[in-house]
Image (cartoon, rainbow, N blue to C red):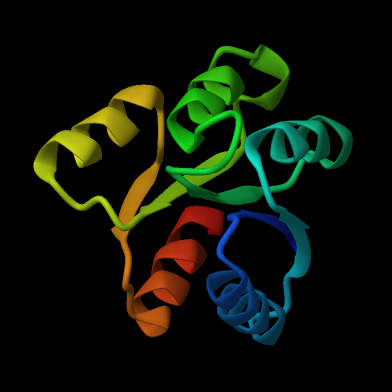
Length: 121
């Protein structure tokens, strides 16, 4: 079953590797480069899962996560927060904002693919 996954990240190298991984897994992939673009795509496309960079221009990933969770129409979307900030406080903030999972950069694509499979099962 093909699922739509949105990559919301402003780092081109990460977007390329995530896009390759997700397409290889059989997903339809959308890409947003900042928080505002991501929110517009989420509302228009209703992806099954969002890979969300915590630190993006404009609307941060933390703020975007809270916005998604506060909208009943979007509440079923799975959110994986990706961040280079891997302190415990950052993880607590991501989970407090409503993320389903927290993945620190750099990450293992194999581990991330497994986590995505779990969340979409």
